[in-house]
Length: 296
Ligand SMILES: C[S@@+](CC[C@H](N)C(=O)[O-])C[C@H]1O[C@@H](n2cnc3c(N)ncnc32)[C@H](O)[C@@H]1O
Figure (cartoon, rainbow, N blue to C red):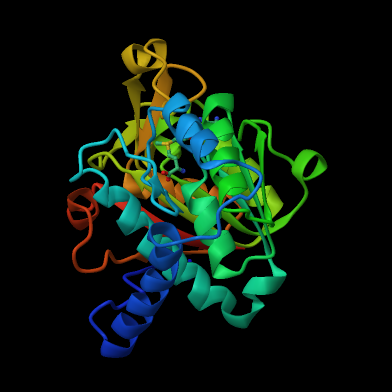
């Protein structure tokens, strides 16, 4: 079989790449954390009240003019967001280059729209964020309205049901922090692959690899494992109304080999495992969270 998975394709130690990353990171962070145009249809009091009414927030958004949301997550864990952002936007910019303004993006499991807005800020022509949770979408819409973003839409949707018929096609899809909350990950990957024409960026936790084989039909007939999916019980968080869980309390988390196998089976012709940049979140550094660029 041809070498299909390329690992560590992004060398973050190269000076020019570092410069590019700093540029792209500062571009997005400038958008995320510095002053932005804020809505003229809402008064300051209304914005302040909405920020409070919509709490708790998962992400820190700087809405400009002194308005910000405060993340309920511990500060050290919030580094997940910055690492995901840096790695995602670098892959996206490297792949699409000056085509960015001509592509459409779907952000699957968009939560409060942090990455949808980051893609819009990179110049993507249209971004659609979907999520199973209306409460999170209400926050995403509030942020987009407040900063008067023109090219972002948010709607309710489950990746178990995604299809060309109900959502159309997208050059770029983001699937960040969702896989390990899914009951049917293979089905969701197939759906996402079917609506993606160029690139899908996937970020997920991965479980420790299990290497082995099993009897298959007779004592002497065996099949090797293609990685494993661990079953995770998210019942406690799910019934407590945690906005980050899946659509059911049953979650599966893949090993790296299983992830790569499933991506291939879903129809991606090549997958690059992206090397975490210096200063990444500790789980990314230890390989317990990975970012893949999967190409159609
Ligand atoms: C851990 S959060 C990650 C959010 C965001 N993508 C990020 O990277 O920060 C998981 C998100 O996926 C959403 N989600 C879970 N299962 C989903 C499904 N089957 N279809 C669509 N969204 C789902 C959750 O509601 C939640 O907003």
